[in-house]
Structure formats: C-alpha cells, structure tokens
Amino acid sequence: MVYLSLNSASESGRAFLTGDANPGRSIQSAGLLKRYGLPYHGSMLALPHLVGWADLEETVIYLGEQGAQTIRLFLPGYTRLAHPALRFGQSLRGKINDFVSQLRGKTAAPLTVEPPLINDLEPIIAGVIAGSPAALAGLRAGDVIQAVNGLPALSRVEAFRRVLKSGSPKITVSRGNNTYSTKLEKKPGRRSGLVMDYDIDPRLIEEIGRVIRRHGVQEAVALTSELAADVINLGLQRFLKEEAEVKTRPVKNRFFGGSIGAAGLLTVNDFKLSLAEYPGKKSGRKPGLILLPGLAFDSRGRDLTGCSYLELERDYQIKKAEIL
Image (cartoon, rainbow, N blue to C red; front, side, top):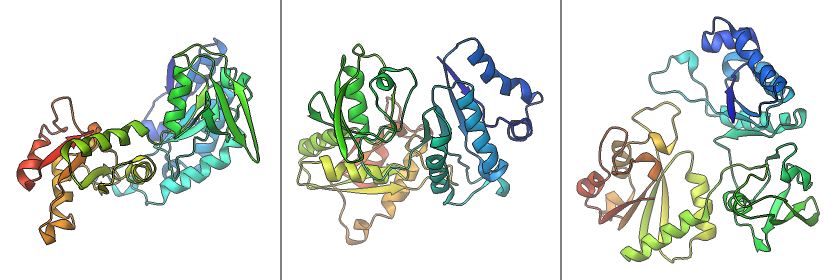
C-alpha cells in the first residue's frame, strides 16, 4: 500500500511549504497512482495559517478526485524554538475539526483528522472505503455501531477491533432514528473498509483496574498527555469497575514546549515537574500509585532522553510507578 503525503495540491503552496524545486512533479504523482490502478492513502499536514483554508480544501478535493482511498489531515505542531511566524493559537485545532466536518460532503474519500478531537465514546463511523465490504453492506459515514455479532459496541476502538477480527460479522447500526443490522462479507483479519477515529481501548482501563488491585491502593494518579486526558477520563468513567479513585493529570511538555502534546514526546522530567505541582504535595499526601503512558518509554522503561521511569519512585518517594 502506498501512503502519499502531499501537503498542498498547488505548485505555489507546495513550493512554499517544502521548498520543492519541482512541485508539479510531486502533485502529479496522485494522478499517476490513479492511472495505473495503484491503491493509496493520501495525507497532508494541515497548515491553513500558512497557505490558507482554500489551499487546504483544494488539496483534499484533489486527492479525492485522484482516487485516494482515505485522506488524513495531521494537526500541525511547533516547539518552543519555533519562529513566531510558524506558531498558531490554541483555537486552530477546533477550527480544523469544524472545517473537516463541513468538507466531508465534498469528497467521497473518508476524511479524518489526527489526532481526532473526541468528546464521547460512541462508535461513530467516520467513513467507508469505496468498494469495500463495509460499502457493499450499505454502511455510511455517520452511522453508529450499536453491536457486533450481538454484543454491544463499547467504543470506536473496541468496535473496529471486533469487526477486524471477525469473519463476516453481523453489525447493528443506528442511522438517525432507525436501527438495522447488516452482514459484512469478509474473512477474519481482513479489512472491512470502515474508517473510525481512535478513542480508547477498554482493555487499557481493564489493565488499570488489574494494576490497582495488585497494589491494593485506594488512590492513583494517571499522568497523561494533554491530547489524551479527556478521552482517558471518559474511559475511566465508563469502564473502571474498581472503587479506587483514579485522577487524571495532563502533563505539559516542557522539553519540546510549544504546542507539542503527544504522549510519545514526554520525558521523565516532564512527569517530575507535573508531580512537583501536584495538589497533594502541599498537604504531604502522596499518591500510592502513578500510572504512566507506555508511548513515552522504550522496552527498558527509558524516555527519549535515556532517563528511567524509576527516577519518579526514587525522587518523589512514590510506592510504585507503572507503565501502561
């Protein structure tokens, strides 16, 4: 499968963003993929504050016309070292999401934003790839999956995984005020053609519950990225069965600074600074358990600067820190 990152379908826009000396050649690559029948997914870094909203719209429509199976818009980011001209306000993320919602009706290709702006765990279908089992079964963008093989769908991630693993699954969906069931003709492990945003896997919350039981604590703090905090809260509210209190604490990225909010770019020092500001520290109360995002660490438990998560236990006299 080919993944084509275009960023701009105008020669002036692409030359400005990438410094490409021959931008027309890059833009024509989408048409060549279509001409030779090569399936591909299109993507672009959404930079409307630099090239304008019209350029963004034209690029999305162009990729759709040139046969992209899906189109992903990646949210931009900048560090504390970025030139002022490259920076943008916090409202840009919401504006891009609103823009994409309006643009979906202008292209047949499923259009998504990464990371998505999610405020619920409803298994909403973001799009359906043309000619796929999901398309042949009559599923559409905006349908909400209620059940897979008779079992309630718990989240987008959980519903997508069950459809992927199943052979010819029976899917019950709601569309407006109507509910109906359909069957996707596919083999186990083969793609369905469903495109869904990533929210949360209930198995993560189940693992949090197991860790809490293993350590026998009544209070835990989940240090999360700024981007994941809201959806982690939603998952805890819906799926956590333990009576222990789990507080989520979004961690600001001070290592990179700027708008960087992904878990994979957090460092041990970022976690330390967050714990230093933790409200319980003033009263002398320390959480019995600290939960850390696995994306921030390698297989040895070290962050991108080489520091071990065990430093958190040592420096803050915390009983236990766990990577999830």
